[in-house]
Length: 245
Ligand SMILES: [Zn+2]
Image (cartoon, rainbow, N blue to C red; front, side, top):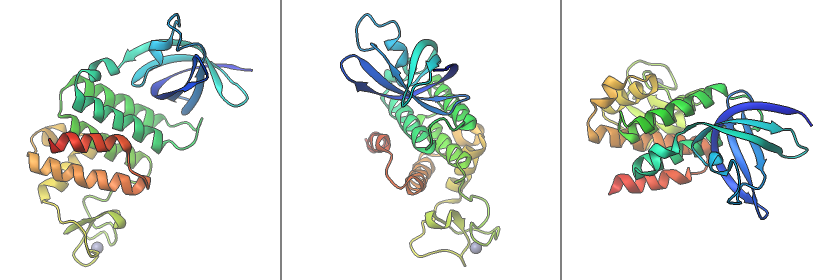
């Protein structure tokens, strides 16, 4: 058995037997790791509370035959604390964790950029500087881009023509009048500009956007993300419900 250290964000946990948990962590160097935390469900556990979703932890693990064993856990930053008191931020954060999990398919495949995007997204979400849905959409667009699914936003996804008319998920983003498939959405120019701003991290433009363009942007980004992930992101349904209220 070999010992290694890494830091990462806890994505999810589930029960194992009477007292243990399996903890899924997106780490900085190793990629996604599933580790067993023994005895953490006992009240006397030294590190149970540190292995909750949203927590940035520093870990020591032993390599096991099937699952690695977490032997030490120190909290670097408990991002969940800033989110639990605020339902829209909490649901946006949950959608981020689930997306990070879905976009990092293999275990122990280094995914440094996805890790950094997730840390940045959770930090921004917790700071309260920007509307949670904007932070979430920026995270979705950038994590899709890192995974190789960046939508075309400034020229036609099919022929590269600079003049675009519509947004077509199946085509991979915006399309010109000639390439436009039937049923493609025709978003406002401001909505496309907002998507570009979120992808680039231009918060001045994003924060100045109007509600209707944010709503249209969220709808397109959610549909685009779900199409690429094949199945729906469960947490997103709560975000949609929140928006509808
Ligand atoms: Zn075209």
